[in-house]
Length: 301
Ligand code: AMP
Ligand code: MN
Ligand code: MN
Ligand code: MN
Image (cartoon, rainbow, N blue to C red; front, top):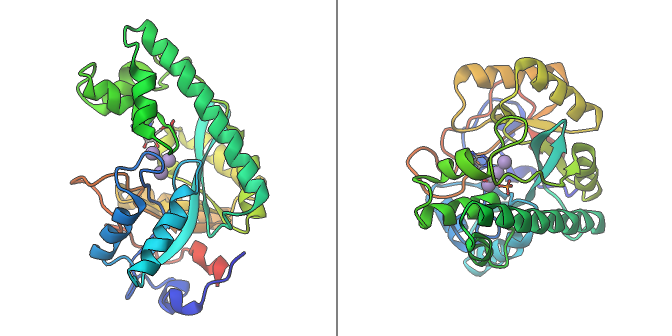
């Protein structure tokens, strides 16, 4: 695990006293996956928002990290970039996202896993394109692929094209009507992805020297019983921490996540999951580590 200098983080944070001096955001996306901004523009935005520590965590790729780091060096920016990734996994019929933080992106096991995930994404995209063609939209795959470019192809690209072509009124509606999975089988153009397991994602992240954090536990639409099962499993396969703070979470939810961390002896992470500028959330906004949490970056110091 790459150790960071203690000056990268204020000592108050380790003492769990909150964020007197530094703004930290450990979950964000660029156009190397389904974010709207290039890595350079994302870094510039983070600087404008006075973020001191930012993790880029694109879906199943680390491609944005070198681009962002080069920009930081070229422009003499003081922001500390944390190398991250968000890995899609399958567990009990649910899609669970595992964030890897402070990883060595050159690690061969991680690279192998990324290649498998990219292949699974490509296969799913083709199958989704075929289903959408049967729904009367024959060009969606080609256009989603063009939109993704060299980056990771995601359902967000399909949703955007469906919206641009006027087949749905919002991107959310593309999920609700066609490509989402509500119910046991999913919508008309839903394709079950062939993701790795939670344990495999955690193992690759650990091989790469990083911390494995369960992304947005509140967003999986799980009952309290199932969420607990998920956290127990995550713990058993050596997961390190939970994202206990997201901008949209209310105080009650933050409290509950903190309680899970304490009960299962897990570290706590926080991030905006920023994808594109919008009025509801932004980089670093509304992120405060709760008192009593063990911040994930304590593992790196
Ligand atoms: P994928 O990883 O290819 O399944 O794409 C999922 C991405 O689509 C997520 O990371 C979100 O950024 C975006 N998204 C937007 N709305 C939804 C939704 N209702 N369900 C799932 N993903 C959504
Ligand atoms: Mn996304
Ligand atoms: Mn996610
Ligand atoms: Mn994300």
